[in-house]
Every structure is written in C-alpha cells, then in structure tokens.
Image 1: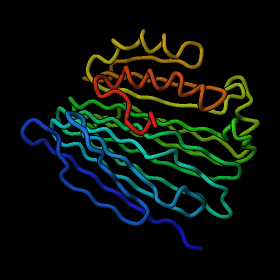
Image 2: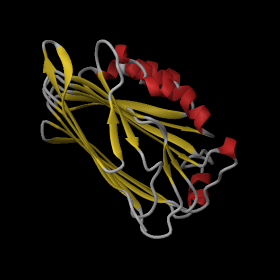
Image 3: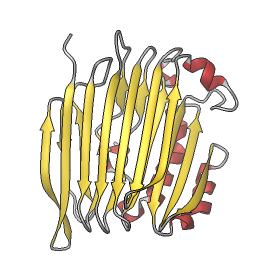
Length: 267
C-alpha cells in the first residue's frame, strides 16, 4: 500500500529589523503556509495533506530561526493517528534557533485512535541566548465523539540542547494497554488528554506562580536554572480535549508574550 514520505523545511532570517522567510522546501504531503500578518513573529502553518498518519508513514519537519528572528510554528488542524495494520507512523522534528532568536513550536493536539502506533522524535538546538516555547498535546480518543482507545503504542522522545549542552531530555512511552495504564492514579487517573509545555530562556521562572494559578490541580509546573539559561516545565491532564484547552490556551497566551495564540487555534 502507498505510504506517506513527506518533508518540510523552513528557515527565517532578519531583514531590516523584521523576520523574513529565507528558505522554504516542501515534499510529498508536507506543506507549509505563511498567513498574512503584521509585525512579529513570522507565523508558519504546517499541513499534512494526507489527513493523518498510519503504520509505515513518515513525516519530517525542520525549522531554523536565524539570528535575531521571531518564529511561531503551528498546524492547520489536529494531527490524527489512525489504526495501524503493520508498522508504526513516525514524525521527526528538528528545531534550530540562532543567537537572540525566539522560536515557538505550538502544534494543535495529536489525536490517537484505537490500535494506532506512533513514534515522534523532537531534537532542538538553541544558541545560548535563544528562547524556546515548546508544546505537544495528545488526546487518546475524543470523548465527545464516543471514541475510546484500548490498545495503541505512543512514543515521544525530546532532546533539547542549549549552546551544545543538554538542558532537557524525556522519553514517553504509552501502551500497548493504553486504557489500563491511563486508569492508574499515578499516571493520569483515567484522564485521556494531556500536554507538556517547555519554556527555555532568560528569567523564565518569573512565570512560575502565574502558570501554577492557571493549571491548578490539573497538573504541575516547575522552574530551574540550567547552566546559563532557565527552564520552566508544565504538564497538564484533563478528561477531554475541551478541558485541556481551557487551561492550555491561557497558559500559551501568557508564556508566548505579545505573540499570543496562533490564529488557527481560535478557528
């Protein structure tokens, strides 16, 4: 059967105090669109024209924010992970931010269906004074649609380096018995929607109390100093995607500063 083999690349540069597109490459089902807007950041929308991913599909994205640029990346819609008859779907994401750059990776939720299989790898390289806002949210079945996920495989690997030094690493593996795992109190207590949000940059700890007020009892947030930079990490869980967004949207709006929420999130 035909499988998706797709790749998209976007690089941005600073031109007369404004972030401009430098290079755009798209292949296969990977498309990138740049909505018209005034001011910063340069906003790009990633699109998978295949409409979702299933076993054997491969999609890759590379985003480079050049020195002094401001770039925000989001998606046209939620990425859907369909039932896999063989193998797994894979997504590889590479993010690079140069000196003084600000990069926000804010895709909409990934929706996993029953019997899906998926692995994502996210590698980030930051200059010492670059700032990163990184979000990934996952929903295991949409309750409003009557969807449930009993068995699936979901893997997520993050590696974030600042000036060549590893500042954040995590590996998440959920499955194969998703329903049993998520039902455990120490995991999500039967919540099927979850998100991880990472902010790296100077003095990010100033957002700690405000972030805790937004998240409440639906997750947790902590902040540290790592070498010459700071790190704020938030995790949220909710019964469904609606409940997740109710806290995720104000959190992103606060941490993303004047750039606020990507346009597609409000559609």
